[in-house]
Amino acid sequence: MSQEHPRFAILGAGHGGTAMAGHLALAGFDVALYNRGEERIHAIRASGGLEILSDSDRCPQGFAPLPLVTSDMREAVEGRDLIMAVVPAFGHRFLAERMAPHLVDGQTIILHPGRTGGALEVLSVLRANGCTADVTVCEAQTLLYASRSVNPAQTRVFAVKNSVPVACIPAHRTPDVIRMLRCALPQFIPGDNVMKTSLDNIGAVFHPAVTVLNAARIESTHGDFDYYTEGITPSVSLILERIDAERVAVAESLGFHAMTAREWLYFAYDAAGRTLIEAMRNNHGYEGIKAPKTIYTRYLSEDIPMSLVPISSLGRMGGVPTPAIDAVILLGSILHGTDYRAEGRTVERMGIAGMDLRRIRRFVLEGRTESEGG
Image (tube, rainbow, N blue to C red; front, side, top):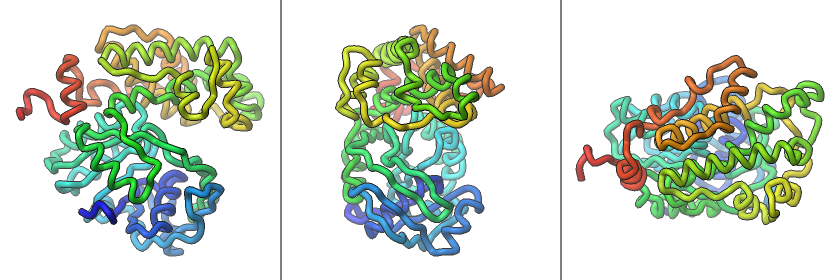
């Protein structure tokens, strides 16, 4: 493995995956692009790459050659140092199941992003599927890019974030992974641990509840209103503050500090305020962002089972009530006709059910439990 010139596999050919694949290829790195279905990669393979249109000086633009574009997982990950999973969080389990037979010692998997408990679930799935390779599983706190697919072989990058924390299991490997990432993508910074990146998932606060509480308006206007500035009123923000307080309390019960949504707005956007609604109003980065056109949006289908359900499950394990979070899980499940609590990422799926705090911390920091020795 070369830390100066790592070889990348990008898993997922949606807007985020193609943005990352194109960015890395234009920067001169060896990149393989994988997608589980052929339809999304046919045009990329036929043209020998994809075109990146960029509005950011942090991302080059032009035609990015991609010699290896495949729907074969073995072909995609073979000989790759950094395996970047850029798919919705409900796709993490599928990727882990398909990767498990093909991984070898020394490879690193990074989820972009992990949502809540992503790295824990992927590691659990790899082990359950017989993977014995010494691999490092990591997660980014959020997706690096604001991007959209123009067509299957053309992606526009609107912005590249200033910094995105990444944390690994075991945690002591994070600095080495960051060094490898930064030779290509200097925006990545070390996160404390995967529990911290998971519980600093602010999308859990801003996405599901706002969508549920604006369901009638979304349906009557087809999303023709500013999601954050009009969809979050003083009354809505009171519910968001309660959800946020429950998230922070769950983190504290596990011995981890999670930043509040107000702190995150200041950290990410320099938007300050004495209340959440005041900070939201002072965030110019949210201006003009429209609501989803329908309630069948990833703000519910991804953020409820992969963000709210794991927070609620962690709360139940630690004896911390989460009534506001539970209410949004229930209402979103009714809206979609789906039992998201049954489908979502629980402590059982994260591989930490029944652990006490000491064992959880050891697992997060060292990647093993006391029963595994060492």
